[in-house]
Length: 318
Image 1 (cartoon, rainbow, N blue to C red):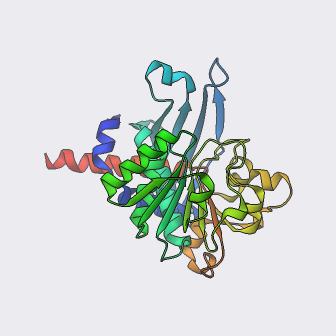
Image 2: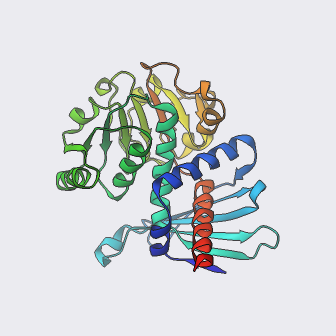
Image 3: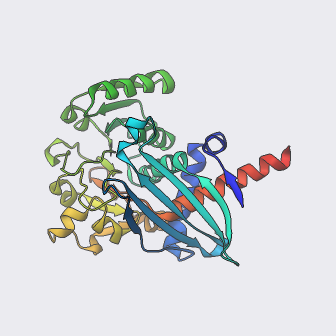
C-alpha cells in the first residue's frame, strides 16, 4: 500500500491543479461517470469530538475510496490541529487498500477549489473585490482559489478575532501584492463582488440588505446539521447552486430555508450541471448567485489520485 504524507502532498499539488481536478469531479457526477454514497457521522467518547466518512466511486477511472474527516476541538490545547483528514483508496477489482493519503492539506485545498470552480462559472467576469467572512485557517485557501479564477484587486476581511483578520490581510498584502484590509462585517460585505463565508456559524451572519447587486456568494462553512452563515432572506433572494442539491438541504447552507419550506430541491442547481450546460448558470450581471459547498468524497478521491500520480511521476523521474 502506498503512503503519502502531509509534507509530500503540499509539495506536489497547486491550487490551479486542484481547481481543474475538482471541476472534472463535479462534471463526472453530473454525467453519471461517478457517484457518492451516504455520509456516515460519528463521534468519540467525548461527544464534541466528531468525524465524518465520505465515500465515492469514479466508474470510468476505477477510482474508489473514502475520506475520514475528524474534528477534535480540544486539540488546540495539546498544540495539535483540531481538524484532520485521511483518504483511503481501495483497489476497485479486489477491495484491498491501495493507498493511504494524509489529507488535511488536500482537504483545505479541495474545499477552496470548489469555491474556485463556482466563482469561475457563476461570478461576474469583471469581479474585482472579494470579501471574506471568517479569518481562520481555511480563509487563506479560499482567497487563493478565487484569485486563481478572477482578477481580484481588493480583499476585505472580517473575523470574530480582529487580530486574526488583520494578520490575514497583512499576509494577502505581502504574499499576493493585493490591496487588503480588515473591516467590520457590514462594511466588508457591502462592497463585495464576490463574498466567501468560511465560518462554523450556527446563526446567520450575512443580511440581505448588505449585499451589492450582482454579487456571487460562496457559502463554504455549513457542513453539518445546525450550521448556517446566511440569513434565510439571502437564500430566498438568490439563484441557488450546490455541489449536491439534496445534501445542501440537510447539512449545507440551505438547510434552514428547506426546513422552513422555502427552498425545494427544484430550486437548487448542481454545479456540475452548470459546468456541463453553462446557460444554467448566471443569466445577467445583476442577479445574485449563491453556491453552497458541503463537500463530497469525489473531491477527496480526485485530489488523492492527483497527488499519487504526481508522486509516482516524481519517483520515476528519480
